[in-house]
Length: 528
Image (tube, rainbow, N blue to C red; front, side, top):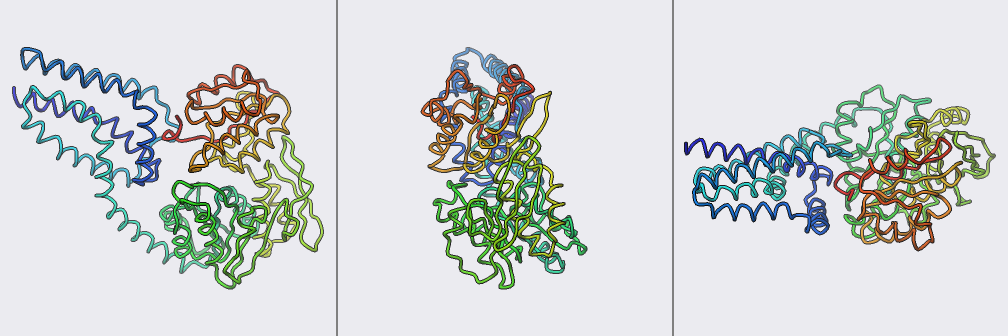
């Protein structure tokens, strides 16, 4: 009987750990497996929901009350019923949960899970074996909460192994790139790099057999996976997106990839939490150009003031592009938008105008096309080929992508919104016919300026949107303040908790003549 009770206690503890462990791993993954980011998220989560821990508090109080029951078997029965009730509520809540970005069960996550299981066994087996039956109830609370904290020990244990695995695979990828004849193009920027990469891939494919890093595979391991699995000797060009949210990231990637052509799309206050200062961001992004070989080519967005004012420490060839700056080597002029796309003329310094048309919308997409044209010209692609390629460029997923859903017109700009991109998206929305809607949770990763930039975002919506739906009561407060300060009619502002509620309002009230802008799509760790 004693053995059966202890086995039952262990089974209940394991069951109570399941969902919290899954959620903890999910949030650790969304915070890029970085303890500092995970800690910051935990602090923010606790500060927002400290008073929502009443369920855990009630359980703790009940366990204390159960201790007053006259018989041990009564205490055990009450604790078991409470544990089963907690399990029922947890699984019912999980069934309703709709993760925006579900947990990706990578090999890294699997290794982390194995370590967590071992740690849990080492922690709970002694308790289950030796703890008096009367006190077994406290294992309920411990099991439910422990792995949120155990993540720290797991991360410390697994980090050396992950670093060893990373170094091994990066060494293999370096050898593949060394023996492959492909010209390597590196792209970085605070925003616009993924769109530029996709556009460049389509344009260079007009003449060359080209490979790009997929999705947002812009980290050392993301690039390593792409090289090991996809880069072949027949490739003539390898387009490599290079992300950075810490000082030293671009330097590391430049040493790893060794690009001959580098593009810096933009620089701004993205990832201020991890970079610390804007100057650190500027210096780090420009490392891509400063690490190019002497025969290399740097392609720079002259409209960006931080790029324009930077004193480069490299004598390689520099090609500039812009929409507003007249002294750029390549400019887009006479831009016209419609629901069908954009028309513009390419003005070369000292040259003539060449007309282009594209399905894409927004100044930043036009700027990204200019960057791709600059690289194309450097690689010998004719103007006629470039015109044809630009006309065929498809929407970049979730970046001002026009969609028809249930008879309604959506502009999907849901990927990683930033101050520049969101402002341009509003300018596009302003030109659209019918009632103009915007659905947004706001912007994140902007450090101490986040509240102010979101407030300015709200102020900019006046006269550009007719209906505003803010997703997330807490993080959209600065946007709401900006809307009110700008004088936006509060009757046309809707604040909801979930994306599902936002779409319900749209489908109930929007017509086929309207346009709905979806600006940003935060992962679950941030959507509050």
